[in-house]
Image (tube, rainbow, N blue to C red; front, side, top):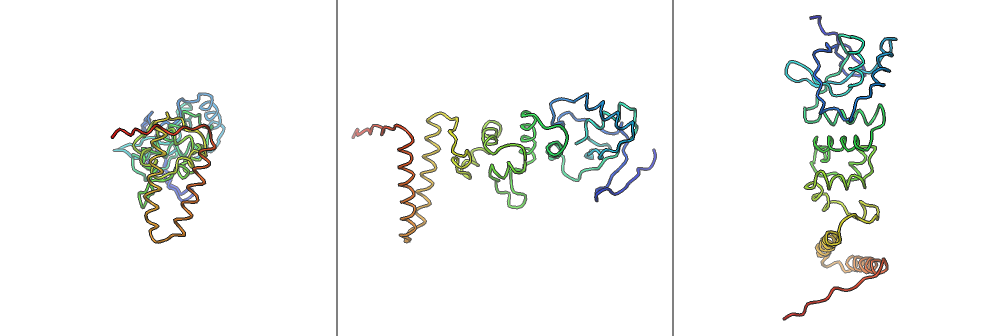
Amino acid sequence: MKKKMQQQVKSRKVLKIPINGILIDADLQIRNEMYHWKVEEYATAYRNGAVFPPVEVGKKGNGFVLIDGFHRLAALKKISAEVVEAVVTDEPEKEWKWIAAKRNLIHGKPLTRDEKRNAFKAYMDAEKYMNKYSRALKSYREIAVDLMVVKHTTLWYWMKEDYPEIWEMLRDKDNLYGVMGGKKLKDDSDETIEKITASLEFALAMSKTLDGNGVARGKVIEKTQEVLELMKQQGAWVMPDVNNDF
């Protein structure tokens, strides 16, 4: 076998790898389908001498696994090419799908809603929802910045459905009204009451830390009364019956 040629492109080492030595793992494909028209388009461009960015692969055993560049590799196979320029990621295998998702978020055909959700799951499975150094949970807004094309309000629902345990932890981190931008939550009444009650109990616990600071406590009470009045104005309300069964 010919010795692999190496060169530096934007500080990333590019190798020429035999195409038949690259494994295709469908699970790493973020897109729900291959676009055959895109393969044809790329194949024509390759025949005409077009230069494409290298594909990205991960090292596994004695071979490589394709991470990004499914359409480019398919086009090269179509024109019977034997080698492809590729960069080898240094990231661990559990992050490969997120790498694939991140590349597709940046370039290529815009992702569909289902494909965006695939990208979200890849992000979560790679544990990118935690701060790299402190391992603290990121907020929905921070996660939305990472994913680029998904609103933080959408992430709230996806998190609840796909990762309920993490959703529970984030519920304590994020103020729900702030997360949802004031939108009505799609929960039943009992669950909504439970969430609001938990927030009020948390506020009460925090207020105890103001012991000895009358001015600060007064500001909190003033704000609480303001919120209470706003809640009363939002719609009809009835005080629950009190059971005085002694």
